[in-house]
Length: 408
Image 1: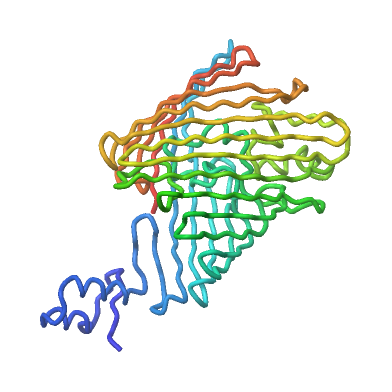
Image 2 (image 1 turned 180 degrees about the horizontal axis):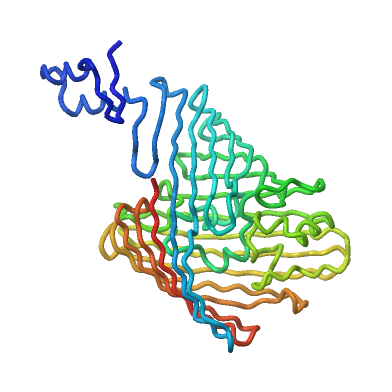
């Protein structure tokens, strides 16, 4: 067996077989590069981090991370309120993924050290791929709901996700998921059962969150990536999701004690008020919650458009139910292909709640610019937001954000 040189640049005491064959002209330079790739046991790939693998492919580990540093200036409309100017480490995530024993037994781990909230486990996944049509995984990961939430925060067209997603997303949870794709990714599905209590939380009772998502890609595989990096053919994604859960008194006590604040966004079906006020349930019975989303995404030659609709129905036992919905529309175009992009987005949320505590009616208009040095692996983004709150006086703020990201 030929001696192997690690791609970290460690010197070899003798030439490898591939080097000898290349030097004698028996194999071409291209064949040599391919042979070296297959022999490498450790190497670095931008955006994927350090990879260590066995030659048979049964063991792999990809260790990498993502850093987002952000500046935010908020021009507050409220009289007497100080405008805010803030630097933040929005996300500092380290991740590892790969497979053990055979290529189909996979794992994933992601931890966040940024965001101002201290260290937090994000993903912990153990799964097995039986075939393209079926994989099963368990652990902690995102429930299969809105497409924008499932798209990584590192792959967004704007500095971050939309107003509507902030209100309605269900975030990460602990549970089990089946997923797969048919007919060369023409149809994709994800179906799971979760605790329903958010990330890093156990379930205090026996209610669960059930979620299903289906995507159709009639023009070919559509990656979870918002910008269009000069695709040579048009791509279209049509998707829908539905989720349901019941919140018991034990769940609501967890909410009241703040246990859900790290598991789900402050603005969602558990806390529908932009100020973080809790839903004011007046009885101890279960509260049934249904959510649904519909989306359409299109990409071609630097143009990317997206629209997504969110709906929620909250039905407390022994009290009147109420509805909430929201949406966003966005479009971007890369004026300089794979380098410079401009984008626009409008997002709105509304509820029919009779309780003033949780009634809301807000919208945002945003304009964004992005410079992609190495696509998402190294980029700078800026967006300007005009935020309007139609139910509260003096809450129409203007927000400027600037963010730099590197994936390593």
